[in-house]
Amino acid sequence: MSATSARTLAERLTARFGSKLESVCETLGETTIEVPAEDLLEVAMALRDESEFHFEQLADLCGVDYLNYGEDEWATSEEVTGQGFSRGVEGQGPGRFDWNERQRDVQMSRRFAAVLHLLSLEHNWRLRVRVYCVDDAVPRVPSVTGIWPGSNWFEREAFDLFGVVFEGHTDLRRILTDYGFVGHPFRKDFPLIGNVEVRYDPEQRRVVYQPVSIEPRINVPRVIRQDSRYQQASAEAADHWQEN
Image (tube, rainbow, N blue to C red; front, side):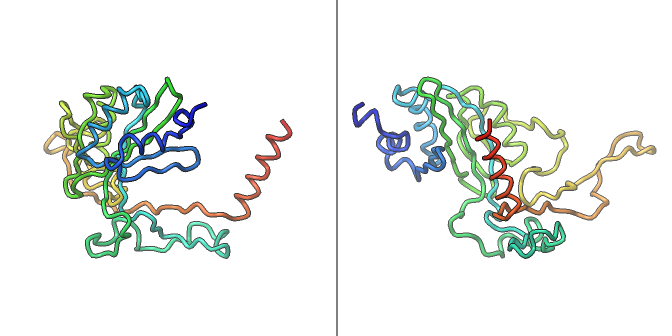
């Protein structure tokens, strides 16, 4: 096997695209690259068409909201492991503060991103491509429907749920929520009860929208941590596979 053919996918990507990639990460057998929005279409076209890569299939495309990334409301020390939900600290989670006045992780300076999951059947490779949106107020990235037509509904879903605008998409409209829906429900600061509620008004003889009448509630992120329960489950699973 030649040195060229023995190169990893990450090394091939770095050699081919160089400065057009903001980062290349290879962790747990998964390869992820970050591409600037302005270079996405050029890189995507090469990933699809060049024989060295040949990512002919887009398996998925999703939106990501990095609001409050790395923060949580949970005490995670071993002393509180068995105390249940009550160990959550009230009032500090996403949606309960003014984000502009809160200190932010400097490594996550951009809030929204689109993530493409690519598959090369020829090389049996999978690749994750992350593209940060240009603007947090109106998050925008180029549409890849002209390269992978199957991304059409995926992009509409990310637009509906996260508010990511895919420039160049020919039919960008909501796909899961109602026509009169207010907001984007997968954003971290979106209240679980929504912003409006509907009811039938017998006097007007129609369904009407009105502000929600119950107390706002925000989902509290859990934290995966190492403790005896997880270690025991992992050991039991390993024993099971060895026995079978």
